[in-house]
View 1 (cartoon, rainbow, N blue to C red):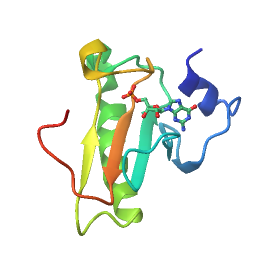
View 2 (tube, rainbow, N blue to C red; view 1 turned 180 degrees about the vertical axis):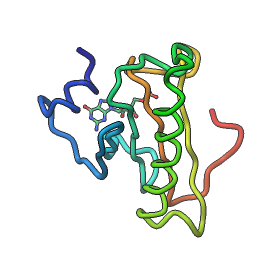
View 3 (tube, protein in one colour; view 1 turned 90 degrees about the vertical axis):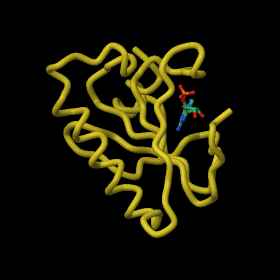
Length: 112
Ligand code: 5GP
């Protein structure tokens, strides 16, 4: 069971900001911006590279909910970044798909 499955199962505590039948969102334990939320599918898809055609509903839902959560957290006006780290070179550290919502400060581009 991955760390994030344990958070879904409430075996590990997290500061949950949104939940429904398909996704869970919680504050990142090591925030890289004033707002740093992770949105994860409850289905344990390891990473976006391993998503399948049947996952299109949950993936669409993940993006739409990330947009709603960003709005609820006050990021609509100044903007926000959505990021997915896929694999070693991207710095992926938890093998359960997660979408980072980052906001509350100006971001640089390209990312490091
Ligand atoms: P990645 O580097 O895989 O894209 O992102 C994993 C994220 O999970 C990191 O930003 C890291 O801070 C966060 N994280 C790791 N362990 C925990 C935890 O136990 N609780 C929470 N809330 N976030 C975690």
